[in-house]
Image (cartoon, rainbow, N blue to C red; front, side, top):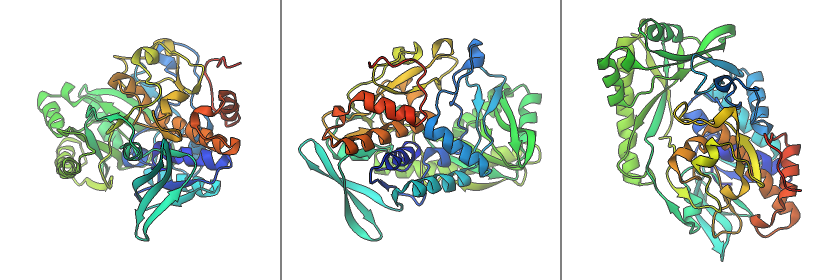
Length: 441
């Protein structure tokens, strides 16, 4: 398992629980990936019930929801709360404490028996024909090879797949991001500023600093307040959305920058790292001048490195389309159901329904024993705006980890040889929800 981010950590837990000897290689000193570096709210466990006045259904369950319940018990998230004002975009808001998230996910990995290799870079692969046989790692301990029967590329950048010879494209169709946590700023005053000046578009209430019914999420459009404010925020790539579960602290303010080439390019990435940190300082000054009482606000945390929405897009056996996503198509080999699109309301999954994620979407074409999961799949940008989202990646991780463990237990040589009936039954046992009957019998 390479990459301990949003998809990879859940894949490792599922694999180890399935009885497979599992190693997780992660270049940073923690697991969690985009969910802890971006600090964003997790808002797509449910279907879009309010927008279409249909039955409310939790459609992503299993290990992802188990994790959320453990995080909630640890005081690290708000629990599921209803979004107010903009039901056509999302109906569920779940705000997290990124440091508690890091602890709880590592605790789950260790509890499951995963050999967690932190501060370890996946540098290259070993191959025999169409099989990956090992991942070469670099750490302070030196160069080593992690050998295995099945491998999961959850690196985000597609490093393992690319080094194994998989076909890929680099669309460079998203900006890169660094998110900062800002202390000394009151979310109630931020909410009031947007509301009183006609810029508020969405908010949510939940538990904050031990008190119920508090503002925990706010989103707005500064351009609706004044053209100059809108222009200033746009020039900095600064998003207006934020969440928190603590008083006097915004868990994240996202600052975006569009690179000229794919973020897999080393020098472009280095330039972007500098530019985003410059923009963070300028964004902090804009917040200080704009929000009442924020004159002494300060940057309390940043992501240690750029977070991305896509680098390499890995060619897999199946490429799900936007038409299939928005029309709620389900597949005879699907591994979970999902009901969110990040471009809503412009693009929505019709009728508050869900679509299914086919097993084939994770199988790297031309390789017998390699999964690609998370943001690296789905070539169509508009379809990718659904499949890349955090909760989708969590569910994808459980599916891939479960399948890898089954292949080991069955003594199979290829991921494609796994009978779907075995996978479906194992996922159901793992409390994965299928929103439509899967006609495999």
